[in-house]
Amino acid sequence: MSQPSRSAGFADPPIDATVRLMTPERIVFDYPLGGPFRRFTAYLVDLCLLALLVVGALALSLLLSLGSAAGMGPALVAYLLLSWGYGAFCEGVFNGQTPGKRALGLRVVSERGVPITGAQAVLRNLVGAVDGLVPFFFMLRLSSMLLSRKFQRLGDLAAGTMVIVEQRRPRLGLVRIQEPRVQAILDRLPVRMAVGSKLARALSDYVRRRHRFGRGLREEMAEPLARPLRARFGLAPGEPADLVLCAGYHRVFLGE
Amino acid sequence: MRVAERLTQREASWRELERLVDQMSEGHFHRPEPAAVLRLGQLYRGVCSDLMLAESYDLPRDTVAYLHGLVGRAHNALYRAQGFRFRDWGRVLFDSAPRTLRHDPALRLAAAVFVVSFLICALVAAAQPVFARQVVGEKYLAAIDHMYSRPIESLRNEGAGRDDAAMAGFYIQHNTSIGLQCFAWGILFGVGSLFQLLSNGVVLGTIFGHMAVSPHAFNFFTFVTAHTSFELTAIVVAGAAGLRMGWGLIDTRGRSRLASLRREATRALPALGVSVLLFVLAAFVEGFLSASTLPYWSKASVAILSALLIAGYLSLGGRDGNRHPGAA
Image 1 (cartoon, rainbow over the protein chains, first blue to last red):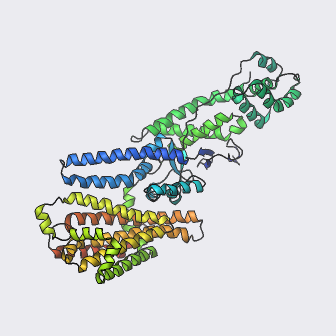
Image 2 (spheres, each protein chain N blue to C red):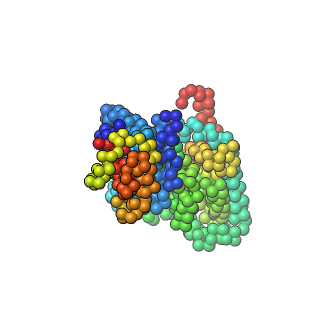
Image 3 (tube, rainbow over the protein chains, first blue to last red):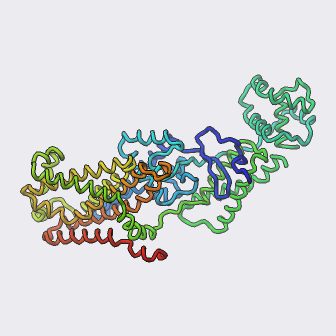
């Protein structure tokens, strides 16, 4: 509890485009940031939806005014409200998500990670008009995103917000190894094996990915870790390094 | 305890949390049940401590990544955006906005830029017919001349395709867009807003000057008088809001440039709200009154009344709040 940033899983901040947040519970966790491409796709989705809404408002207004010219008035007001207020309204009411952002798993949060306020939603969308209306000014939006550390466009900078990716990761369990030769090595390992968290993580990383490599490559990668293990637990030097690591993983993570 | 045992032990509560978060983010419109919220809080705290202890538990990297995602989603389900509270807006518009606007140098600068460019161009355009043609362009000027070549009465008698509601909608849409852009361009160190103010002042001033000396001056003034006060003030206030935001980038007053921008942008929002309100008022006056066949004195009195209203709002608005700081 004394050092939350160190106990949050990764010891060092990853070099990736992620942002580290601290919750009110003093828990630190990582969010991936929404990059320009994903956000542009979300923007296109919103744009299509907006066009549909505008056409819908026009149709409704004309229908209600029985096709007279008076119907254009409410339609134009609706157009104003939609074109300037769509993003602000959606983000303010739906917890930082427009339908397009929702479809792509994006969410607007303030830079500290807390939800955005209504004023922030309004501000980021109003100022966003500068970098979005004219085609040429997409360059302004893009360069602002690339120059700022958190992929913020001008509206984000003014409102103090950022766009994060909310991921739904598959829940991956532990790997089961059913090889008779691993079982043979297991019998010679102690029941309790204290390896330390660094080695434990290395073991799990290796076992998770080993199926992608051929036999020769596995041996080559596993050897530096397997050598001290062999020496420590009195295994034969001829024991394949791959199997030694598998057995070690089995002991540390699965027990039995 | 082995990792496998720990995982099987915690797995169920992670799944439950995931299900609850999904439910919460599905139902935007109906409130979640209190029991579900309580349970969500419990499970969230549990998964938080799992994540915190991930290292000492030797959890595999994938599981840690999964936990990061789960904590993130649960955090966003629990701490939600406040949305908009319209009562607050009313208080801001009629209490704090006039108070800040009264002392805002940005408003004075915006007003000075707009009024000076407007007056100069109006005078020059009245004196030199060539000037108007060069500034706003031959074609546009001809269109304006044509528009006001006949009095409103004759237009209305013919029923020449003019509909009040439609035009009010058009004015609201068109003018408010101009105002909002006037604000948004302020992000470029205020230069954008300044330019917008200047160009609006120049074009409007030139047209005023040109029309004042043209033979259709009376038609022109019958149309524009009523909504002038609202509309021109709205432009100035929107430009002032943009200037304030841009000035935040220049004079940071000890903060980082971004933090200063953020502060000034937030402080400029109430002024922008005032400007939108004025634009909407102007559009209604323009759509329903300016185009009507009412006599000129009634339109002029509306203009004077609205000017008094604005002056009263700016000079007296929010004074009451000063005297009772506790009554908010």
